[in-house]
Amino acid sequence: MLKKMFFLLFIVSVFKCQASDFLIGVNSHLYQKKDEEIISTIEKVKSLGIKAIRVDAPWKLVEQVKGAYSIPPAWDVIVDYASKNNIDVLFILDYGNKYYDNGDKPISKDAVKGFVNYVDYLTKHFSNRVRFYQIWNEWNNKNGDTTPGKVEDYKVLVKNTYPIIKKNAQDSIVITSSFSPAAFNKAIGLERRGDYFRDFLTTDMVNFTDALSIHPYTTYRKPPFHQFKYYTKQIEYAMDLLKSGPFKNKPIYITEIGWTTASSPVAVSLNTQAQDLKNAICQAKKLGYAGVFIYELKDNHLYPKDPEDGFGILDSKMQNKDAANIIQNLACN
Image (cartoon, rainbow, N blue to C red):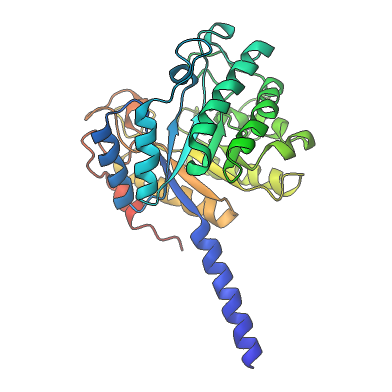
């Protein structure tokens, strides 16, 4: 009987540990902010019970003169103050540099080498002080004023970049497979092309990936594909791919998900945003995702009209929207 009790206590403790390992993070555009705003933002993040913050670390700001590298002082403030408050940092290693491939995605050998040199410098500087490094952001998209890229070119970049990160930051988690929601267009029946996530999950990439990432937005899709159920279809599809292939032992994060409350036809109400985020996080947790990074922390304007300006769980004055209140007191059944 005593052995049985110890066994049951062990099982309960394991489940508690697994549940506590689930990470809730948030995206915030802090990389060019003043120290005061960085500090107040991180304090707000902590007050919401959020445990990680995802921030761009653009190549063009590290290598402003070709071959010369420097880290913007604000980035050390982000990392140090986040660490002081027990908040993990995810740095996105992203976007082009005007000295390579005309600022487009690094595809040529010279540009890939240039990108790797930037990553080498940055990860030597921060090393294991940064928990997560993510290689690029939505490679198949136009982000950073770049041309949509091919999966095969992204694989080349990852294979060249991953070993450098692990050399400089052995304990860090390197996240790959960052594609836009179009990665699932074929899977959900929206169009005949767009299966980029599946295309990335080939055996040769297993040893160049610590964790995977998806962005299962529904916001800009035409009806009925904008409905919440298509968020569910995307995260189920991605998890099924992982479980059935060579990446089955790799964790997967949703590094962006959100709904806008701007004055726009694609927007939702404050209450719907809150409920959708709660359901999105709880569904991901139930399916076995390692964590969710909400997009994003705050609105860009007080009464936003552009959908991109209204994804925040805070308004532009850092006041809680309904979503922030729910996140702060989140409980998944």
